[in-house]
Length: 344
Length: 270
Image 1 (spheres, rainbow over the protein chains, first blue to last red):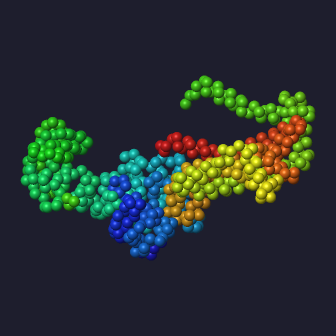
Image 2 (cartoon, rainbow over the protein chains, first blue to last red; image 1 turned 60 degrees about the vertical axis):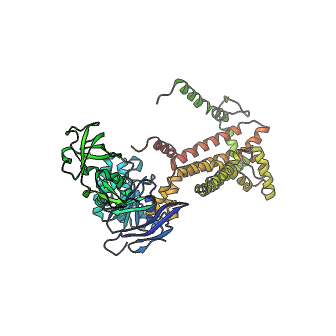
Image 3 (tube, chains in turn orange, green; image 1 turned 180 degrees about the vertical axis):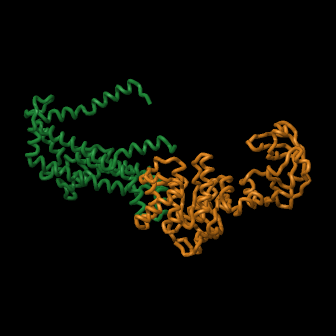
């Protein structure tokens, strides 16, 4: 479509959209590079799907601008935007076969039959659906439908592919597998992917960069590592992974004084227990209130002596160390490894 | 699923009782005598030939078929337009409009007949095929609207959006996605409208004229002054025609689609 080698740069500037009094999208600015894998992460109702529909052209922004490869697409209808969309419910055409679903977009563009056929074959093998071209949609499994939806969107080689929680209906194992496949597919096609999800693990494991939304506002747009290690707000720190978030008052008994107006974010895996805690700069004894065994490690909740709020800790060898609910343990951590977020 | 003995007995009785009148009608149509009776005393094609040799009967048949065909097409178009227009309408408006569309079902047909006659006289259309067609349109729309509206409601709105994002303009999205998915509803609407228009007596009786009368009205009129088996012969032809239509529709668009839709709903994606 475009003459540039790598297309798919998307720039959002102060994009807003309200429904009545509800600000669904509130002044969101994002600069997404061509070929990036982006995740939009947030709880349901945070505006991520509305933003996706604005990018697709199904919703219009009340304010702000949206540039696709430098071109303002505000007045461009969805069918001329060069943007692909994989719907949450997939929206496959039930009256067409797998091959006809995939050919749909090319046939609208009036491509010659031989070309359409070749591209459909190519797309079918790209998503590993070989031999299923003649099947009806109703005859496919959940994972196969997923692949048809992907092939149908990718065969048109859109600059940007939007994916609206496409894996949410699948079971965990299939979900993991398709996450990997999506990632590989994105690398091999070089298409800009924007993947909407409310599952933080999915977002962190798949995306190059993650945009975290809350109540229509962009909380942070950063790499998964930065999001986790250097959250920009209390919301991000709480939403992405578990965290012990403490204010100055709660930290005073431990002898820590965070800068004014900030909260300390201590990740549970940064809390050592037992002998491993003895070398930590901050140490405190406590009673184990709960212990959940989750395979490779155990998740513990401790009430530290003299502190009201219980602490979360992840401990690899908890059981071997003889830790059990009701027992006593020493917890230690290094505040230098902790992040801090504004208290507001 | 196993059903109880009593349920199966009732079902069997129904299956015997439903076609019972047809057996009488078809059986007596082959009578060689001039009196309607069952069982027929012999076998002959006499009354079928009588029908085919009488221009008045054939004319009435032609009028009925023409009106029914026009009524099926027009009613379906009107119902399709109404269903599409009301799809996105606010619930309150939609409720009022649907009540208006379904209203002809609520009124006694005799009253409707008199009312429509009044309007047709005002329009100068009483006793004409156009007048009868207009009346049948009103009578058939409730039956045509339902299947189309139900079909439309079953179509996921994201399908039209999917077509759009793949490059379809609104007209292409309608033609390539919405319309094919409405096929069962449209087929049912046309079939219902045709059969209802073709069979209608009560209202039509008020609207026929000396030149233009429909087959069912003619049958009714004939039964009033004589009871020869020609009406049974004609009725048998109508039964055959209706059965043929249903089979044709099944072959053309597959009425089975109704069953498929339900089956899919019952067994969510494996």
